[in-house]
Image (cartoon, rainbow, N blue to C red; front, side):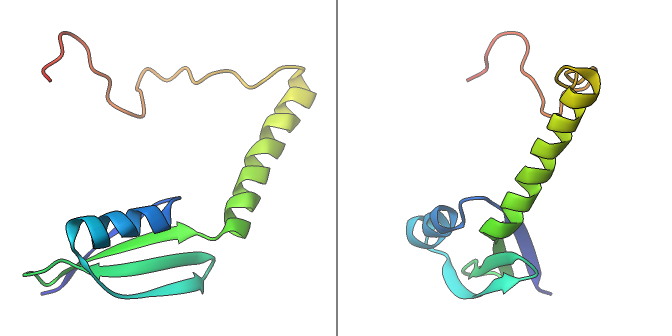
Length: 102
């Protein structure tokens, strides 16, 4: 059985260098410009597992950033202010409370 783990990043070159040059994974392939993404495949020695690293090409990131910026501008125009901060009681990331265990 073969397993492929995928990780998206905005810093493809740096992350590939870390896994390939720093940790010693072997680069076995990749792609450029596939549906707006670049990617690199690395094999994990001694296993049938591969790590797939992907990044959006610059044009795709720019369109996404422009959409977010346009949405905020439209909210400011409509309501005369910035959109409200999230009122969700759940944080998207866990927060640490109490004494540190480090």
